[in-house]
Length: 173
Image 1 (tube, rainbow, N blue to C red):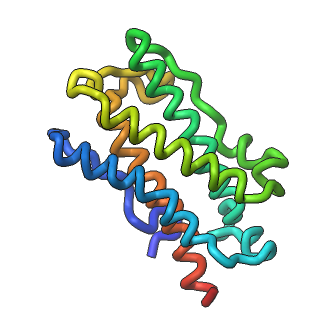
Image 2: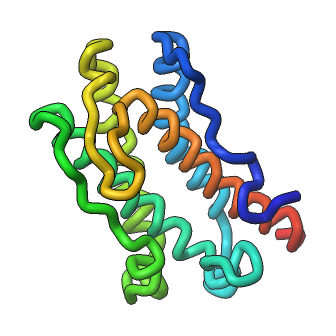
């Protein structure tokens, strides 16, 4: 098993139809419960265990999900209210090294993540097909349509949840 990509890399189809969008919105809504289940009952030592060699701890992964989904939700809103805005990428490793990520209680981020995912899904359900084709400009990746970003972030939550569940399986937790 590839410990970096336990569910593989994101697969974004060339044609993103309504059925695909609806399945991704479903994934967004399901992700907080899946994450909560993945971390349920873990001890402090388990939360501070890296999910792979040279990887983040479980605690950092939980905080990373809240941080990055909050950031991308905000980028969605910029793209819906501005014409192809240039977004500010975040340094995920620098964020993960901050004290709130290395030592903060995960309950804060579990609540944030659930709220962000619910609110983001509410927004996405109201978006028209033309809204989903609106774009933002990533300084390194270029112009990105919201439909494709939705697919990446539906995958992203499952990807990191699989890091945690994979660690639990390997460790017998």
